[in-house]
Image (cartoon, rainbow, N blue to C red):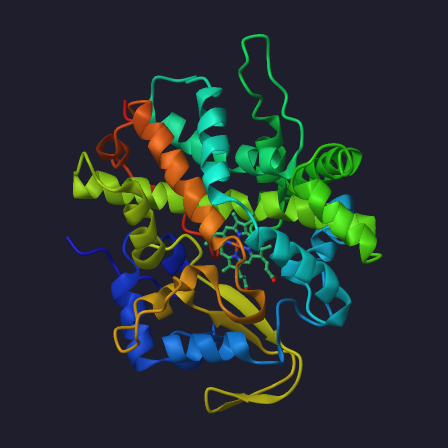
Length: 377
Ligand code: HEM
């Protein structure tokens, strides 16, 4: 039976099969105004590329650098300092440092770190779904913390604590427009803890955080901005990578193959069932966008997942899910290694992808497609 088509591009994110809908949008309404969402919608690859490259397209509304629910709290301070959430000259030096250090990462070393940490994560439940949900949200973040040079707690048996990953996921959830007041309150506490923890360790050790801190110190950059962006790397690694892992498990479960090439499967899934389905831009000036007149203050929903399925466009070298242009993801190669490492670790623990598909649903989200595997009883 065919599922009912999504009602709009936001509900498409968590729909069971949004791709026919996205393909139709890219073909017939490549750039249009959605009156009920009050958003322009860019759907074709050409429109998505044009919006992401437009000099007046900003990542936040001019009047609202921080979401109102977070403003004035430790979570708001953290959010407001992220290069991901800022445009303009003030952030350029720090952004250049982060991009340079990210590009210099040794991905073979990342793979080994992920394997080592996986070996220190005990299996806590017999149920495959529970384990998949838990690992998606922990192993990538713990690997990143380890890469940053932050100390992870271990118990007497050598098992690594997943506490840090819990704080990162809690903060990431508080950034969502779907966050409840309780989610925001928890996010503020998490931001406070993470800021203190990363700040305390910015200079001891020889990881990515300490290299970033050194370069930032030489360039006279505010240490608080540096710490926020180091935490930002863990936050960026959290939900999107969880989605890439989950969607790869779904793909493996459906394909039924027992000896699939995991790296190749992750690469394919980043294209065909991408974890980040859309992003937004806010116009800082009146402009012409995709042949239409748009006004300062207008918001554009940029359908990365529709661009990926635009059959008239040439295949991009890099999957659309990682964005493009000035804010394009600097962690794409890292994300693929983290995702492949986590999938491999789950398979090695005898998690069977085909057994995860029982009643597949997706976590509520306006932009990220992350499966929520349900235990089968
Ligand atoms: C599957 C996993 C990931 C996906 C799909 C993804 C996707 C994206 C997208 C779409 C953007 C651009 C948002 C926009 O332009 O509006 C972005 C930005 C960013 N990503 Fe990723 N990301 C992933 C993993 C990671 C990881 C693991 C890291 C780092 C450890 C990372 C670091 C960043 C940073 C720092 C930015 C902001 C760049 C800037 O504003 O200049 N991402 N990511």
